[in-house]
Length: 269
Image (cartoon, rainbow, N blue to C red; front, side, top):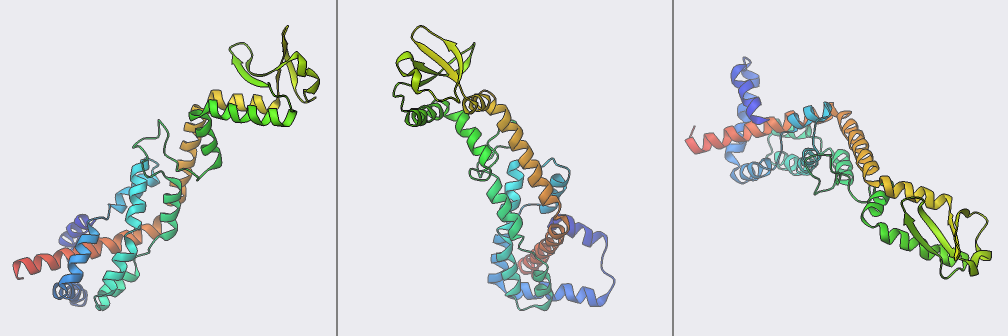
């Protein structure tokens, strides 16, 4: 951002001596304050190109990693602001006041996006754990189908009092509950008979049908849901474009002023 701004300052030089002196005052203050200048240079090294990131966000082409990088940049803003304020220079204090910490945006991204999110959305793994209940449920079903079925089986045994109730699967009937003949009288009325065997009965329930649908389509539904949630996140960030652009411009100015001060020091200008 600073590179583009510096080019703009060179291509469109100031004509007002008042504005020129204000800029020089800021540079002079940073020249004199070596420690603050060094701290600012270090901090600015962690700042991503917020302007480019926002362009990609508004157009819906930003990747999960890029959005997480935006949040990491927001995490640096309070420190940048504090360092600029500490110079005791009115021009830098005014610039610092224009740096919005963007705490709400940072918090929203950190809550929504997994720190290890891949570069693309095609394989999932983008939405952070705990952000959306259905995402967590679908992941659990996809990654632990046997465990989910075992939990349901144990709960149904407890609810019905049928110790040998079991849940099984075949390609014809899908998932079903099997009860031996000796326990048929204990089967709840809500169970729907699916198949009669010589040794017992097979049933389905509404809950098991819904679980089967989730298991068989968990991965596809998960990818679709993550894509929708990520798109919603991009829209919510895009709605704050003006705030982010104002902050990006202030950070870019701070970057250029700090660079000019560093160059002036190194070259004894």
